[in-house]
Length: 337
Ligand SMILES: [Zn+2]
Image (cartoon, rainbow, N blue to C red; front, side):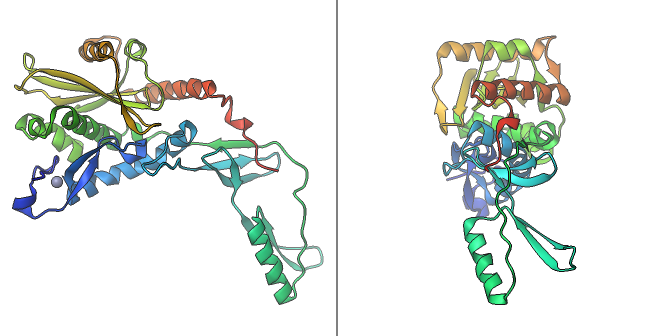
């Protein structure tokens, strides 16, 4: 009988409908699910903060070619800057830039009204020809003109990943990761009350925090399409801590419990968003992650809650990763003739 992982109500007592809960949100290319993990109400509540994140991360997913659960890489909005003008458009998943068709109404020197259509598809051109013929209007067709080199700008500000919504989403990833690694029974205990509350309302503060620790990132290197959750549960210090890593470099520390008295366990889940599957990793790597969990918490080098540093570090990492893939500079993507 399913029980909602978030409000802990069960199907029988509350006549609820249940849905599968994504461990990593679909916005991150996640398709690992906890079967019947949440009730409709909780699922709806969680999806609200995931939508904001999805929009923000679309350009990154396009650049890293991370598909959704249907195998589709998202296209992303772009601004195309030509020497004389700036246009709107989008970059398709294959890197092709498509300008958004536009129509402007102008009056020429003779006082005639002109509608100027730009960036049309062949089908749309054909439609216009037929329409002009029917209405007895004159259609002046102009060629593509001389090719120009343009700059294609995509992206935007990374705001949500460091905001309260981002932290709540990360707490949810750590919490559902714990379910995946240790089973449903353990998380429904009172030891995890605070993290459930944090997922719902963003309090108490400090449950999830972003951090940067270069030694940690170096010790356990991950690629830009890997997400992971490393969990260490220790009865002696009554703690269950998790480090969540998104896109290989965005690191968060989640206190899943600080009054835990269950069994000790340590485990790491690494998810490859490019392939859409869990990654088997070496045991040695797992050990390294766990030792690091304690170290990160106590290390003087760890920089906590500094959003600017956190986002800046990620952008540098992304830049290096994209250069390795041959994307030297986004300005090199040219608009088709
Ligand atoms: Zn619920």
